[in-house]
Amino acid sequence: MQFSRLAMAIKITKFWGASVGLAPYSSSNYSFYSNKYIVGTTTSVNTNYTGTGRLNQFYFANGFRLNKHLSIGVQASVLFGSLMQNEVLNTDITTDSITTTRDLYLSKLLPKAGIQYHTKISKNLQLNMGAAATAKASLNANYSLTVQEGSTVLINDSTIKQGYFAMPLNYTAGLSLVYKNALTLSADYQAQHWGDVQYKGLGYSLTNSNRISAGLQYIQQGKYYNYTYDKYYLQAGGYYSNSYLVVNGYQLKDAGFTLGAGATTKRGLGYQVNLQLGQCGTTNYGLIKEQYTQFGVSLFYRDFWRTKAKIYD
Image (cartoon, rainbow, N blue to C red; front, side):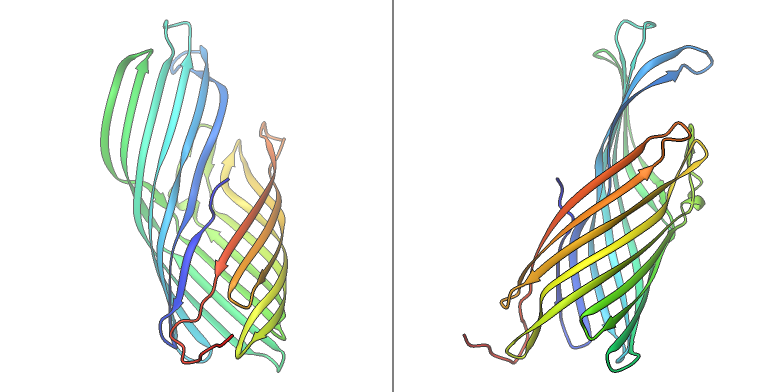
């Protein structure tokens, strides 16, 4: 279990809104055994690999309405977190196992910009379009390497590496149609240029990735004095993506669908539950296939600030 997002937003003026939040950006959690060949020989040793850690994103976002139809947004994010990679070699060449531990502490400021346009197509139908992009950036790292044979430390080295890992250009575009403020049909496309990073290892490499998703939402609205709120809503969607990973010459695929439902009280307290079912990978090319299920719960609260209206119970 992990938290998905903690966020707060406020409308500062009629044309300016701001948001601040904390959310996971990426995570690492694996453990497996494999045979590793000693360089320059045909001898293989039983090796255990484990990895843990995560990158988090603290962001501050601002949106500005330029006119009746057009808005722009800018966001500054600080990526931070730590990763631990552990490799244990069990071999007859030495009496004790050889353990290599890499500790990474990563950080980077990441800017993002977006634009949104909306207009009425007819009396009951509204069109919304938007796009956002994040520029290519390099993560800095405090890098620590420790190699031990049993309890004997062979290597203990720490250094600060500038530009340790590159984040690619990332852009997204989407549109939605809203009918009578109740029924919404939306679609998004996202692309990440991981191929420009040119990072690869034994049996794998990074390539450009893309993802397409679409969804449908129905909202039943209610009135509380002069304010409109969402009494309840139902959601359903699906997605398909080509991963940034190419393993044994095969680009990993990920596909699934989601279901969601939520409600809001007159006082502004709301909740949402969602279910995600998906499948990633393949049993061909010497790979594995993962079938996953995720369940999430969101809680939120909406209050009226900076308003001249007074509400009496």
